[in-house]
Image 1 (spheres, rainbow, N blue to C red):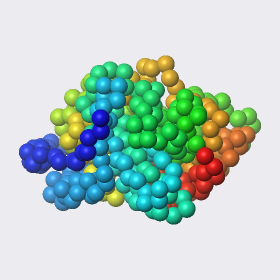
Image 2 (image 1 turned 90 degrees about the vertical axis):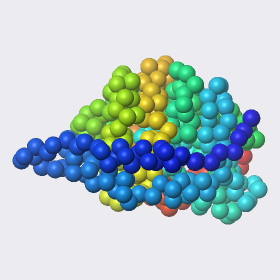
Image 3 (image 1 turned 30 degrees about the horizontal axis):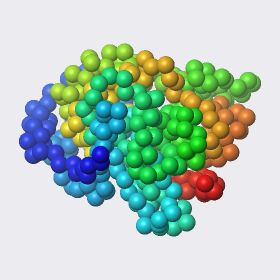
Length: 373
């Protein structure tokens, strides 16, 4: 059973958020410290963004923008699944499943839905679900929601929508779901397109073998990426092992939830970053749905499951790497087996937010070669 859905945050929830932000406590600066981001989000930056969230940010305007897209909920495997379903005016458009990552939400794709559904030769019927435990796919129905179970749920969602065959795209968690869909349901997936960024090379050697004979410059770039990952991965280590501890802070403190997400957006975005209102829309979704806790739970379940993030298949695959350099493909695809590989100097981890036009064109280009389906 599918139910139409609209986001309607009660005014009491907004009032409570504003009250908490007005009464927020902030850390005392240490004399002599440089207020940079080397140890996380500086207090001054947290305070400034929190004050804008309280006094300048218009949730109702953002809520209306979100509700401009048709939204629904359905129950799959006992779990409420929230999703956007935007059909193109072109009847023979290709069904396209877009899956977000962490610490993001379905709102990541708002700027690409319209262009992707335009009734041209490369039109798509777009489906954007919220990963279980994220956004409005909450509360969790029980334990065990991780990558594999989510993949099966999203395959079932596409079945219920009448899409026997479909395209899949995503980044971060979404890349894992996208790849696993192709591995488990190769007869249904016509192609997979994933986004990544330069930081992905830090995982080489852990999940992928390193190519031989890296140059000094390539090794230096790899070492820098690894050092950045070691310095920034504390969020993942904590949530992969003790999610209930951080859940208490993320659920009770909007400033805590704000800093927890905003620090990653600053670290993982390119030069242009993400619009402040779009960032706060994403943070607000986490806050109102209390999904800071359940998103952390997803990362815990993923870390303790028997399934890895990579699932090879023979389904046509495309990669789009943002904030890239030649070393990324040298390390991630040394034999150049991925036929469609795009390097972009612009953007970063949140490509659909940062560079929507580049992403849309790359998705169109890749799936144009998969349309004989």
